[in-house]
Amino acid sequence: MNKKGRVFRVMAWVGLIPLLACLLGGLALAALGLRVEDARSAYASGSRYEPVPTLLPDGYEALDGTTITIWFLDGPRFFSAEETFARELARGKTDDGRLAYRIEFDEAGFNQYLRYWFLPPGDEMNQAFEGLRDPRVDLRRGGLTLLADAQVGGQWQPVGLLYNLDDTATQLNFVGIEYQGNVVTTLPGSFMDDQAGATLEGLANRALRELTFIDESGTTLMIRQIAIEDDQAVVLATNP
Image (cartoon, rainbow, N blue to C red; front, side, top):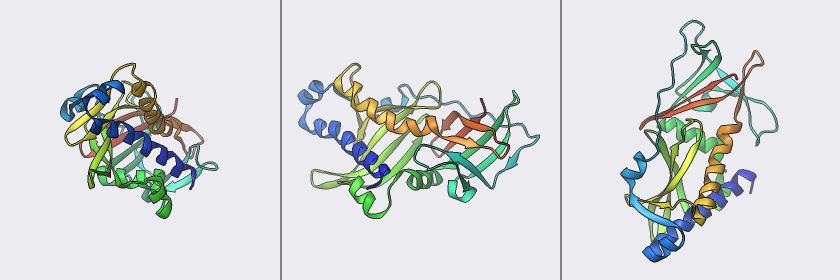
């Protein structure tokens, strides 16, 4: 199994721990530092949305691809626009004159992008997601849910890992496990908050933090803002 497969196997098992605790009842939930709240309340709590600013029309151009570097690549690599699965991949400048890339995904394209980058292929995916199937992302205003179907009570049912954008609009905060219209969340300072929550956030945020775009001019750009709505995600990357 490759590195990506091992990462997602860990992610899958860590995500199932609080779900299994949920099935044990309220006493076990409290002992593990967990609580249950309505999913709609969890969506609104701490989520952040601010539209990504448009780039100046002067010099704005569509790109046929981009060169990126990130820890699991051997070095910088060029990807065509088709390989990014973005609805829009463009270059321009911000109001303060910085070079910027604007990358816009619809929900289908965003799922294709995540599958391409972060899900191992074929048999490796089956091993990485042992006991899970059909991993996918559901976008919503200010956050997203990583979903998969899991065996619960002998039936396949959707289970999700709920994330909200943080105050920087560049990182994700793990909120809890979504199941049957409820969200199992961690109590502040509990074992699950300090351990499982931190693990899940770290897996998701490392890619956002370390992804670097290399412009044809040699300028490097990093993610500066993410805006998520129910049907699209927009990423703005700029030079420092």
